[in-house]
Image (cartoon, rainbow, N blue to C red; front, side):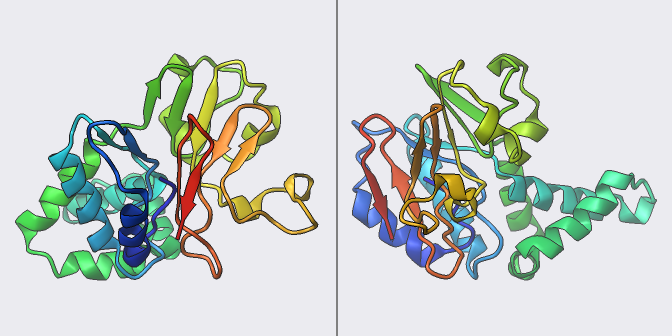
Length: 231
């Protein structure tokens, strides 16, 4: 499942559409449950509760927006002690300037134990999942570095270089993060940017179809068959 970004109604509609079967399916979320859309808390809780219900069959991964959120609250915890580094200060502004404002407003309404429960859950999220020839992460990889040597920053933030330089050597990389609408024109068909999941020739599957964008969709991809669902 590609980036949800607070689009709760789309998430619920997509889950109804795909008819997740815990006996047969492995459901992998590629991160970015929060920010940009209006219902980040609801989206986070939905995925969190689904994972708790089916921990062996639901794999929620870490996205860069979850990291920005966590860094913000780490900064909040250090503010009064003045133990702030440049990353703390930078991440506060980065999160609020990248769709975190509405999420922050929702989180402020939570009682402290409820907020901490959600922050703890986000902290435990993995930055990747690998099964067979498929490697799932939020953003991408360094194209010429073995998978077991990848750095978290690249798995969460990678854009430039990955799509053009990866040669398929490490299997199929399944990502979100970059909306397909932002692909370079050489990937377009019929002179228009794509709006569906993209299966690139160099073994990359792009699942982020711009859920929060005007005309964008939330998508789920069956990586084994190439079938996909959108709302």
